[in-house]
Length: 391
Image (cartoon, rainbow, N blue to C red; front, side, top):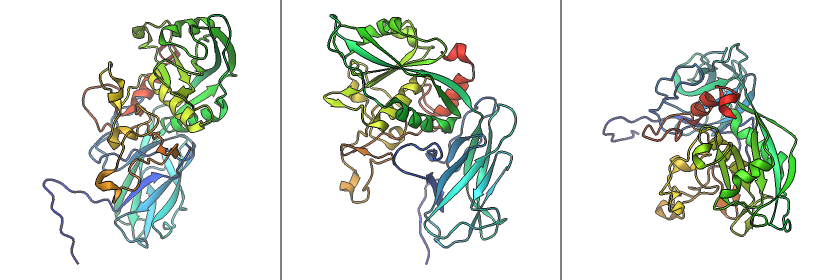
């Protein structure tokens, strides 16, 4: 039989695709994959020139790291004989399937790659080549891989008990900082970012309201406890009008603040999120993105924050999407062909799928607004300038 397809300008059919190897909580060995669009590039990063247009997906990993991804046969027979090769084994090698062996049959195939241990601090990139029929057969699909050296960043966590003006009524947040930070590490590892965590500092402070910090009181918290040459993360029961704040060294003064820092509130409305580890991890990783100078994918009028919610997949897959949970209320066509249109693979809380954890590599959105896309390059180029710029 023949397949009749109409195309106005250009049509590309991918016989297969690559996805994160797991679902649910972030896993440092299973990076998210930027598979948006097939006419976008990765900007220059840490001395590596911008890529050519990538006709497939792309992701990042660490030197000497072993990671897993999933290959899915979409438009090719599940028994088609496929081999995987690296276009440059100095950048990464294919560990599984083993060298010279074909991929297992079936709709899905788990793959393991090992990042190279090359010298120098400039990242390198190469491609997973999917070859048909023979180990040196024709290449029918590619996956781009960036391998990064580690950029070490220090985090100083604080557990803040907020008493009222008389010194009473405050309770210490019960967030599991260690578990949440493990997931934060997993989310940022794909950019080569590695966090060192200092011992948690607990302190109490008198503010106007017990268990809640207003924005105007940020400098008061800084004055109580702030450690130089680290990202100070303050965890408290509730913040004014937000789940979290993240202020970079480059932008904090514009908000009337004395210092940069990150703040997290456990309570949103009447709900206490302190026992929801991924909620906490996702929000903390998001606020760290702001500390690294990233913006939301798009923001509405500042006077009406409820208009900031996004309804398209491009924004909602980003870690930097404005909300911890998805915003769309009903799927197209009543859900007939979109059974999980809101689920980006990170689980569900109270019936609503979580925001995803993608830190974008491609520059799909090329319009105005620095830090809205190609966020991996933005962050690494910022962090690599050193502690005096970062902290």
